[in-house]
Length: 115
Image (cartoon, rainbow, N blue to C red; front, side):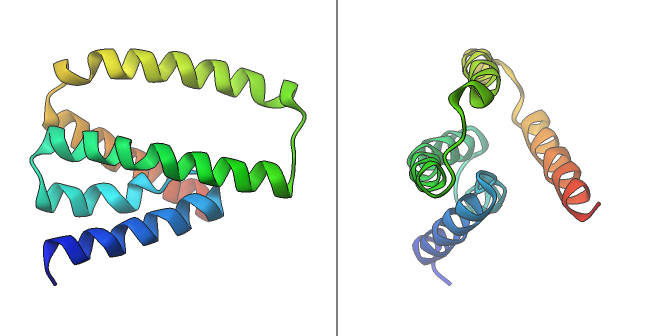
């Protein structure tokens, strides 16, 4: 399968996973992107692709089961702070470590879903 077609399929799978679980589409997208692109570029493209997917998933989730905003505020505040810190340190972290950390999060998430 050609690289571009693989990326379309991975994007569709990432969107489905993101919509079903409220996130996590990057776990599908990143392995495909690292086959096609250099490490840092793959991570950056994954993040750029996830932004609109998360926005659509959030809008659909809020429409189908609206939460009380006070319940989401701590997660949002922590996520914003973590996103800024992660973005500022992204260029300073070796790609090998990023791959291992992403893999560890995937394994951890998979185990948590099973238990």
